Image (tube, rainbow, N blue to C red):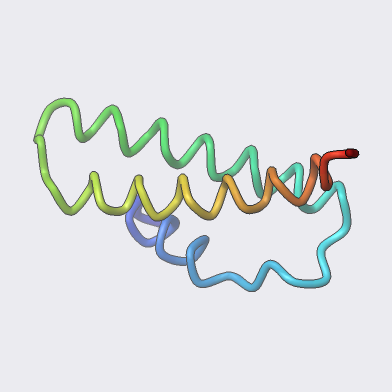
Length: 73
């Protein structure tokens, strides 16, 4: 599967009703995708790749926020 196809599939995947281990796995997958896209972006400077990385990063942040839980006050 092509890198962009994997990234688009990850973006469209539903993230509700995930277990903690599923969230950890999704976060790691997002990180790996972002790093792979970044390597290609360094060479091509394609703005489409940058937009894709931003979307993946936003989704990764949401997953990690859910993993860490609400801060105790």
